[in-house]
Image: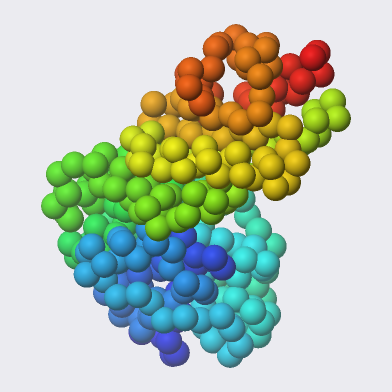
Length: 312
Ligand SMILES: [Mn+2]
């Protein structure tokens, strides 16, 4: 089954864990089937991905940003904008993806497998089964991590039974006995609270609003456990006060969202009790209020706050 020319397997730009790990996993499968394939990445691996590769002793793939003259296999994307530069000068050999179909076109027939599952690594795992190829421990390990990451530890609405089934198999091969615990560790690495300054945490996902003439800022951080933020909460609060003075906000709100508990501790600076009570029917205790079931800024925090400000 050998083909002419090396196949460069690559995920999308600003690579996440799935983009890099599904490329590595697919390369091993292709090589086992007699092809000559190499895993690549289009950018720097994030902290979570570095942790995953390090933990399972897998090398960081080579950087590849230009497709000119190369035979390529795209994973985790099929949008030209997310793909290699000069993709039109590359020969696309195949595509494996779990997003909407993008705008990549080819002049010749290609391998093209897209499934509406939670992770590209799930699809690659299914292919290992299909071709009856054994998955090495360390590759099973990084694939498990990719699935945990993409599906937010099976909590995301994108999760399917197939993701759970494949992840279970992979975790068994990799000797991971506590998948949940590994997932939590991944999200710790991802949110990277420890290495960020309070201001970086505050502004990493921060939006400005005008509520009835009041300038209001609402930020959010998503973590697997609010306890991860225990040590920075006070510093965050001080930073919120500083930002309020510096930038002339009437109020600054910061959502500490616990993706496991599915709730948000909402910190506030500048807003009075009345606004809080009106918006959420709750008193502020200390600097914050816990809102059960609240995870979405645009759906569950902005509308009630806006209403409260408007009826002041
Ligand atoms: Mn993905």
